[in-house]
Length: 171
Image 1 (tube, one colour):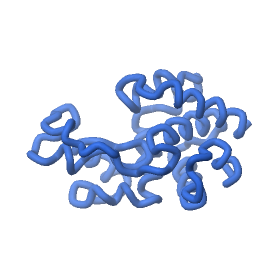
Image 2 (cartoon, rainbow, N blue to C red):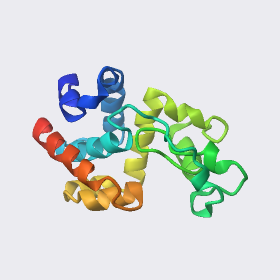
Image 3 (cartoon, rainbow, N blue to C red):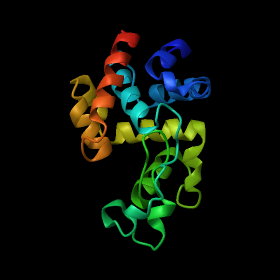
Image 4 (cartoon, rainbow, N blue to C red):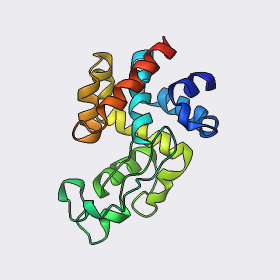
């Protein structure tokens, strides 16, 4: 993907597109997001979850995740400490632990590492691959991709709009 293509897909990224271009390309290569269809699906989801590369940390406090055993948040303060970070908003102690093992980072001790550009991209690639989303992307099933990332269909219209643009740009 080129810088011009990234800016066409995520025009709100502005100068951040330049910062994220190489790490995004590297993460897509590392995690086999290696066809135009997969890349379009991935970039559409990244575009929505990160506000077109403007946010690598969830805007909400994370208090809503406090005590959520399904996220592994079993210690007081885990909700805020392990709120969404990275381009696909890795959330919860359990996801941070698994992501850290996969990326060779101690994310339980330093969750803010996912706010660094390279790790924000790599964590998104890890999340994508660990959930088997290439298979859904290959099938063109953006709704199921969204459900795996978001747990529901929050922002589906924007995700689909970004996907349509990405499909045209990357064709």
